[in-house]
Length: 273
Image 1 (cartoon, rainbow, N blue to C red):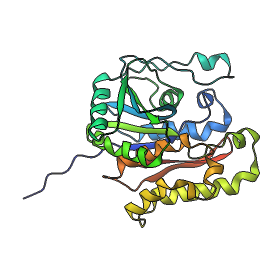
Image 2 (image 1 turned 90 degrees about the horizontal axis):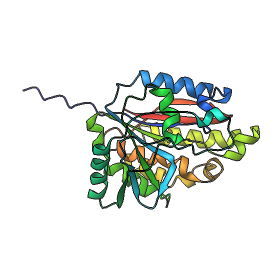
Image 3 (image 1 turned 90 degrees about the vertical axis):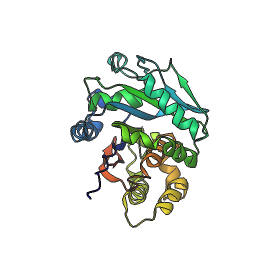
Image 4 (image 1 turned 60 degrees about the vertical axis):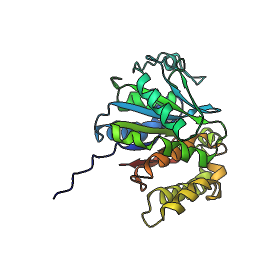
């Protein structure tokens, strides 16, 4: 008797969204990132919906956008007028939002729905590059204000079954996020940046690392080389923890799909497929 083939799991992607609206304003420091995002979209099957965990939304409890047509949130300042005219008219997905709420609360993690919250640039900047027609419904899931890495992995595990539903899950952040270094073009930071970059890639992609060790390394990420130099505040790293939590039951070993410089900083993107 031939065993039935298990359906493929939907991909989970941790990606960089760059500096504010700069990736879609033609900034040269983002050219390689823009090319990567446009290319990776063509390599993925078109999903029926997209869930984004953005570095730019923190709540006391896990919160899910549940409106039918979320508006754009221009959550940046000091850019040209055109940065405040960007549109990404993707629909929301209230039914999916409710399903995610139920999955999270079933794991005894407090959660709520937010029918008024719009899409921040952690969603609309990368998706405008990846899926410019905006025809795929989108929702966002917040980070937790406590910034606890263990709890963010648990949050991911609570919604891991979404991978069975042709939903593209994106953690939108940056694997290196030291704003002072970005704006100062401090080349002396390269050793610190490279050391953390190497540690993160090894942690996420090395098949010889046991699953429990991999998870503990992510929980204790502050012990990595120059961790706090690369992330003075960890909100741009934690979407990766949620992604890992979602992926770890099915495909715990990621592959590096981007590893290059954005505004002078070495940044990585990971795909669990």
